[in-house]
Figure 1 (cartoon, rainbow, N blue to C red):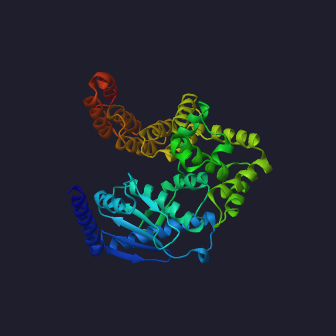
Figure 2: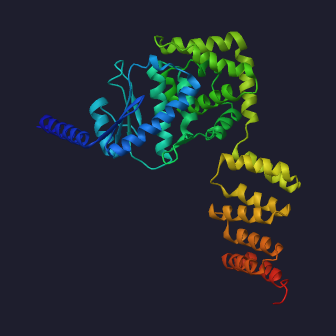
Figure 3: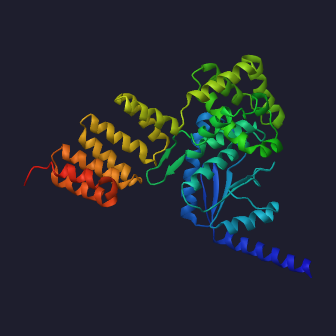
Length: 393
């Protein structure tokens, strides 16, 4: 009875999947074949996004399209439930996020995704689409290279209306990588470059940030020899090699040409040279206290580039602009900080002081009133004292 019930459930799921596929729209582009349950228009948008990602990936790896055995298959589900049902039928389990299923037969291989909100959708898509891209040319790429670059590409976003791809540097793992280094928890480079699948999964909390950090080091190190190692490691990849063989090629070059100890020291120095958001903010605050306006601006601009959602850099850039008598610039920064969630009392008080310095007394009074209303215990006396200095009407 139980077996019959399970067969009926499986048949129902299969029927549901088949029905969804009938209603799905598709799109074909130079490198992708896309099916989306959200319709043909969505499939076309998705194909354009994927082509932009492909160009980004291949701008670095420079694989020949002649070695691509066919278009890359992508299937989008309109819900996580549909994704789970389909994946359950294929591999007997579910996944929390997008997944690329790779088979020796390229026609069977496909990237499975489901609808979700931004920026998570683009981050997951850029990550797994890179895995799909790389394995289409090199079925067994080094794990550090595969996952390091996949993480690095997660900040790539596509604006379909403008037809533009944006790719700011991904520094989300920097603080974690530096923390691991500070606690002497990073793997030796010989282990990182030769790690197996099971070991990488078991040590994911270290492997992921370190793989990203090592890729960042090779790509951005001021020592050109390490940039060269990255390109040579890419060129050494072989489509017919095993995982162990492809990993051994890069590790052999690192050991023979640079020395593991020397490379480890250079890697550690690189991590020390990259500043996290808290480090940049702290440096900016110190420079501001020392009235080193240029140094403070440099630190806060870098912090803002790293985390545009934080009000702290905007607020301090407003203070610096005020100190330099750039009152319009100060107002712009204060208002940006306010929109990002800065304390309304302190920000409106700063806006009031800034407007007062421009002799915009009506605006100043309005800002100051808001500051007083937001926090009378902190700003009532200060506001009353400043308003008392206004010239009589």
